[in-house]
Amino acid sequence: MNSIPTNCNSVRDIRRVGSLRAPFSSASLQPVRSVARRVTRQTRRMAIFSGDIVADDKKTDEKTAAASSRGFAGLPEKPEDMRQSTPAASSFMQEKMDFVKQDFQYCWRNTLNRDNFDDNIYFEDPISKFTNYTGYKFNITFLRNFLAPIYEIHDIKQNPDNELEILSRWSFSMQFWWLRYLPPIKAIWDPRLAFTGTTILGVNPENGKFNKHVDAWDSNQDNKFFSFEGFMFVQQQIWNFSKSSDLATPEFCILKKYKKYEIRRYKPFLVAEVKLNDPKQSEGGNIDPAESDKASAFKQLAGFLGKKNDRSQGLSMTTPVFNKSKQGVMQFYIGEGYKDVSEVPAPKNSSINIRQEPGGLYGVDVFSGNAKQPRVNDRERQLRQWLKRDGTMPVSDEWVLAQYNVPWQLPGFKRNELLIPIDEKTFELW
Image (cartoon, rainbow, N blue to C red; front, side, top):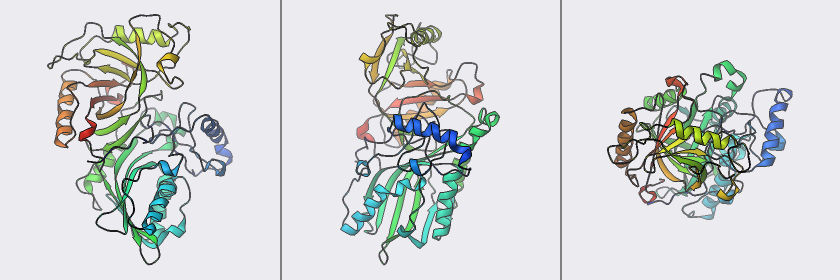
């Protein structure tokens, strides 16, 4: 059993920004760069997935640019923070693994160092293939400039079956960053693509350069080029019109993304919670958040954020709204700026409780439309079946419904998530 990385970068859905060199003039990007520098100075915390994408310049090469004053996306601040689960068999291979730690995952921000790659490097993933460095560089440059990926390696190790190969496990996200300049389109279509998987990096013993890069996606059974399954997985994400808002969300990282669901690790986060009014029981005896009356709970929590607290201080609106089956409560995430319960303004409403959610591992089903019964219960049962099928066991019969949008949002544009806490002992990273 593989232990799980605990220092994975944070994610606010895919809403924050990775840095890149965008195909615009320097002058046109000055306002964006100004925001990026200001936010980068304020925080160096890390996130994997992002939304609106901006550019960096030489002054921000060592930091991740940000497009929004509400968030930040980046990479580990120190190469030694990157996990290496097994030692290298030789100093030569350890040197290559150190390169992967220090430089390889940063190639999506900076120009590739030509000296580290063989002229005939072979690249393959389910939907693309190149057989030389020119094609390899073109692929990275195109993705960086057009889709601005944010990439994180969770673990690396030497291939036990081939001493000249390095294995890595990663998460990867992309977004059409240029939609920020097309607001009417972005308002209805703003796809966020996420992938997780493994990479085999081969080394040419004659020159010490990387000569192979082969990716496999967790979502696929068929990872050979050209994979129709992989192509359809990309299309499924591109043409997903469900949207989440640009408000702050709890930080998480996606450790595995399958075709139907994903495994996330959430960091601990603060919430304000209140009991649901007139809660309805589900089949298992838990509260059924999809059927219970949520209007009163929402109004109370919104009042707390709107200055009904001992400091008469307004708190930022956040997303999603969590509804927990076991406790029968509605929760609002308390955004950045509060590190501890003691720092949060005390509610004037004694029914509201401020506490910290411990985070942890969750299986997550993301779906659009209205989160009503019996649809939600059907998806909860299906998610449990998927988790058990893949050997990842739920902790209990508890589940959480997360809703991201205002009630009047058109059903096709609504984003909902069903989360089930899972037993970390049953999860394998590799």
